[in-house]
Image (cartoon, rainbow, N blue to C red; front, side, top):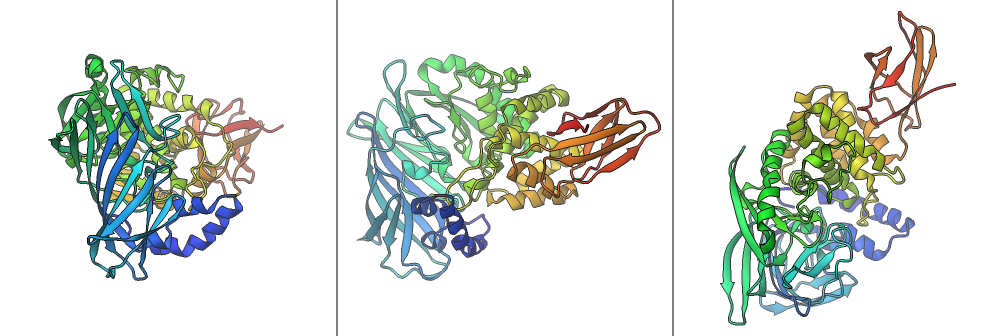
Length: 548
């Protein structure tokens, strides 16, 4: 919770009971609550440092080792500490001050019974040991775990992915988004003919007598749990220096040996991405830890400073333009999208996964801004509007709190179109860019909730956007601009929307652009000429319909 809102856990404890009741009413289980809420056994301590020290055996498909967890005591009543680890992995031992501690197991949650008095404001550490065969990823990165594959030369090609499912699927940790560890060391032992690439910077490679090597990585910045990763393979490395807003940024690339030539060409999009996103969002948030693209045996994921890539060295999304506009083939989707998460997901992180739209809506919208930066505003509008065909409107974008429940997949394309619509409402790109950069500056390395983001954009734009957020984040209906034409009179209102929906909209009346301020009640505009055509600007994610 350091670098975060240090008082926020108190508020969450107050609503814990209420939200738990809500969760159970939605058929969630006790395990969902233990995983998704800030339990009393989590709330009293603040993460400061991890040292994850593990051995990965490709032949046996096992992981074994320990995590040393350093923390600062925030409150009294702290005899138990919750650590999370998902079966079939087993938490075998916990040690503090060289003394083994009792562990009570409850599914994925493991409660360590502390013997030493935990004094408020003091810092302590506990080392937990674990081993076993972790869950195999069935459809990574969406159904995560560990992917065990082989490259074209028959060598192991292994990677972790765990967003949503939780980092505890492969390593023991405080598996909740609200408390990011301040810094971290990652030590991974692998066969000597392989390399492990993880987050941060490589500080040392140790050669062992048993034909293995241990790769030591050091992360200096706060990092969320699912952003931690291992990537094991027959990697080769190349890189470049990027002159960015905060100085020289090391950009390093790790790819399978046979793909080096293709990667040197395709990964040119990495520096282009950095150029566009530093313009729109401000400095890359992790200069101290470098930026890496790492080839992985699945599509890709936004692991902090260790972005994984598996898009087949093609433009688009596996060679396909998700927008149908043509602009999606101008760039490698995975490089741009997953790198965009360094700002929205890794720099600004949701406290609860129910607010995952903060990660995915802004990052899907970042693709649009990449197009805007290199190909212009009209092209970017065509790109984001083209994504509307993939919006389903079956469930709200925001999920259910305190039970590790994501909202709908509309957080991608619908969320991006909501932000595109808000850009129109602000109607000033200088202000809009300052808001995007301001978010990354004012919430730098913080975990946030939806209300904080909503309030920030409303305040900085000087527009009350609460009804807009309610409509698009919490409702599944598309607003309909309903109108009637009677000679020189246009009567109109919003329908199919929340009761307080009052969003302004740009409308072309007789091919002349005007701003209207509809509500859910009828309004009338009088013109000097007979009204022949009424068209809502397509940059707004709404529908229009003439009332009969």
